[in-house]
Length: 162
Image 1: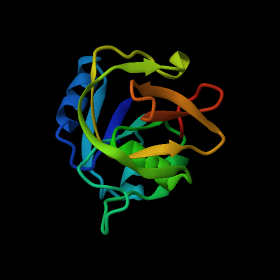
Image 2: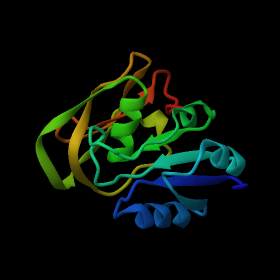
Image 3: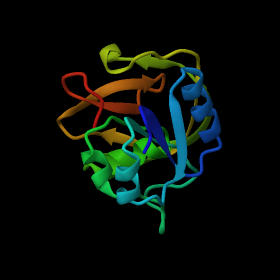
């Protein structure tokens, strides 16, 4: 069991270790597990939050990694980063499309719903092949990059998606 900790499900991102380090710098326990971790194993860990990492895949690729959608029913905040965000949107009935252009590089981050995030600081790096274009109605854009296309959905009312 993770005591007051965060679980990162790794989809192959080159930044997974950096994400974990940043969480640990905030004095929060963090554990990294492969995206193939079962829902039962995730439940047994009882994390306080889950992060779905990025990765090199497209949600449309044959054999693309996925997770049990039951992760979103565990009652804890789930943050999807890059591929993890695309997968979240895809699994929860949003619309994901192939990006007009492949991108990789620095971006500016705008927090549209500051009450949904404890703290955001520093620059971000954007890298994408697919991008969410529409979320279900109960989600609103919470964080977006300077392209105005990349959005991390936040459940209406300010709470992160669960």
